[in-house]
Structure formats: C-alpha cells, structure tokens
Image 1 (spheres, protein in one colour):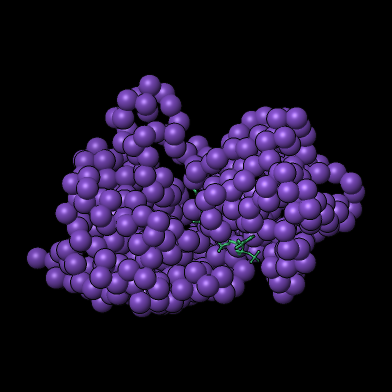
Image 2 (cartoon, protein in one colour; image 1 turned 90 degrees about the vertical axis):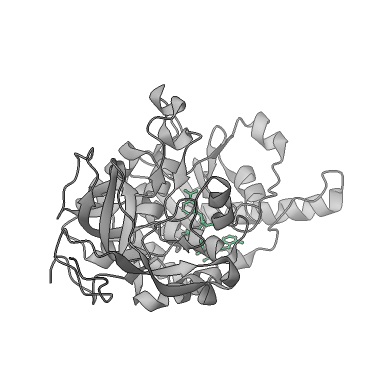
Length: 415
Ligand code: NAP
C-alpha cells in the first residue's frame, strides 16, 4: 500500500503514486486578490487516462493566466468547466512545470516512468475533426490551456497532462529554471516565427512591448538569435540593463509619453493632432534606440488597448503587429487608414503547437535562450508570486515556485 500522502519536498519512490497530494487551490469563495485566492489543501491525486501522463512536479512557473484565474475575471474558469461537465469545485492553476514522469496511460509511448520532462500548456482533443483533418491544433475548437482552462495544473505535487505536452528537460537547467520558460517562450516563438511571411529575419527591427516581462524577455532573445534588432519598451529605467543584457539594441521608457489608450474621434482635429504628436514622438524614440530611421517590421504586442493604436501607426509598410493578449483592456482602436493604405497586418496569436514548442525547447537546451529566471518562491507562496505580477511589481524576467525540489540550484533527481 503506498503511503497516503507525502509532505511537499519529500518525493515518493519513482513510480509510486500516493492517493492524496497537496495542491495550491483556488476556490470561488476566494476569488479576488491573488495573495488570498490560493491556499494549500490536501486532495485526491488524479489518475491518468489512456493517453495521459502523471508528472511529479519539481518546480512550477508563475504566469499571468493564473492572475486572471485568481480574480475570477474575465472568466470564472471553475464555472466554465462545470458547464462542460467537470465536477471539481476548485482550480489547480499552473501552466509551466518541470518534473518526473510517475505514471503513464496504456497508450502513451513517447515518455516512460522516470523520465525528466518540461511541460507545455497547449491541450486539445486529438480526435477533434479539425485536427484529424490536418489543422494546426492551436487553431482547433478543442484547444485549451492546461492549468488555466483545464484543471490539474502544476501548483500541486502531481499534475495531469496529455502525452504530447511532455518535452525533454534541458539537462543544463535547474528544476526551477526549467519550469520558467515554456509558456512565455513558445508563445513568443510562434508570434515571431509562426506567421510567414512576417517572421523575424536578419536585420529586422522589432518593437517589443514589456521587454522586461515574461514574454518580452523571451522575445528579445528570439529576435537576437535570428539576427534581428530588438527594441524593448519598459516603464522604468531600472529595467534597461536587464533588456540590454538579453540582447536589446535599445530601450524606450513608455513613461516619457502620454498618448496611450484609445484613439480620439477622427473628426476631433485638435485631439487627434495631439495623439499623432505623441505617436510620432514615440516613433522618433524608436529610431533613436535603433540608431537609424527604420520602422519595426514586427511589433510584439500584448498590452492591447493601451498600445495597439501606436503599434499599428508605427509598424512598417507590409509589417505585422502580432498580439497574444490585451492586458490593459480589450477595446483597442485601429486607425484603418494605416492598416489598408500601408498594407499592414494585425495578427492574433495564441501559445504554440508541438513543432513550435519542440523548436523553442531545442534552442533552450542548446543554451541559445536563457529562461531569465528572476525569483524563486516556496510552495506556500504561489499567491504571493501572482500578487506581485498583478501589481506589475515583479522583478524582470520569469518567476518559478519550488514544489518537489526542496531548494534551488539542483539539476538532477533525486538530489
Ligand atoms: P509580465 O511578465 O507581467 O510582462 C508584461 C509587461 O507588460 C510588464 O512587464 C509591463 O512592463 C508591460 N505592461 C504592463 N502594462 C502595460 C501597459 N499599459 N502598456 C505597456 N506595457 C505594459 O506578463 P507576461 O507573462 O509577459 O504576459 C503578458 C500578457 O500576455 C498577460 O496578459 C498574459 O496573460 C498574456 N499571455 C498570453 C499568452 C497566450 O498564449 N495568449 C501567453 C503568455 C502570456 P513595463 O511596465 O516595464 O512596461
């Protein structure tokens, strides 16, 4: 008989799955500030289905999606799942992890018990008609994000994933480093490499909003690796050095400008003139940071409402504004005159497919991309790490949480 439950940081023998586990849960009664929304509770350990894998979590990554889950806004993820038949009255967040395979379903062939893995957060129904027909699974109507839309994320001793979510853990990385990069990195990879012909190439200037953030820290490095010129935007000069170290060619402080947010009415000449002055000033700052008068071939956007008008205005003729979020708001204005006359592209992008995750993971394993790990938290600090992110008070780069790994700095198991 396996032991009923193990304390966090005490690994069961490999392959032995205790019936209960500790998880940092969100319940609807706690929706609100992330600091209070998460609480550690003991619950039943899930059992893998035929094509699923149960992973003993060594470390988990903090991402913005579980700020949203904690708030219960814009989607109550628990109620959304219940409407589709789920019974759990809780949410286990966590969409990034490194860990050890402890159990596999009968049909799993790509990993076995004992393998060291990192997990990607894209999930889908492999039998969905749009996937069987050959479509990109990230475009499938069955697509979901593990540890956000789907339950059993990585803020727990064990997490449940589909087999294709497992990738080899780069041996050069610690457990916490390996847990920090996949969600933001693979998302940035698809944004910059997944939308031909607008892919980053040698010599391309690229504007990266939130350069010191999770996505931004990955985007700077990807652009650098493909020979482009990353120009990062931040809100404080204390973040300049971080971006420059990652390979940014220049950095702009967005606090030097005030024209953010929705566009004024186009027939309000005075207000529109003021807006255009702000946007042109920002454009000059871009040229200064780049060292030449060229506009970005790609603008890497995720703030949304605050930045899209400027992104659309600034991107080069035939260039692309690519967006994966609207953190500052969803009602972003596009001045259509710039879009059609200058034949610009406005492209939505969401996480990444298996090929994109694998390509990105290889770059990390080769040491070409650093996870940009900034701060590591203990298991009872899941809420705290999300609170910092919510307040935009987190340190530059990516944060991770120790789960099975008792302390920082280890690359092996057991240690
Ligand atoms: P993050 O680490 O918090 O970084 C975001 C950065 O955006 C911040 O560091 C901040 O930098 C900047 N920012 C905040 N408000 C801004 C504003 N009003 N105008 C301009 N810049 C602003 O978060 P992240 O991990 O990069 O994620 C960012 C967003 O993308 C979140 O909404 C997240 O949910 C989403 N996301 C989506 C996907 C997907 O697949 N769809 C994947 C990953 C993330 P400064 O204050 O220094 O400018």
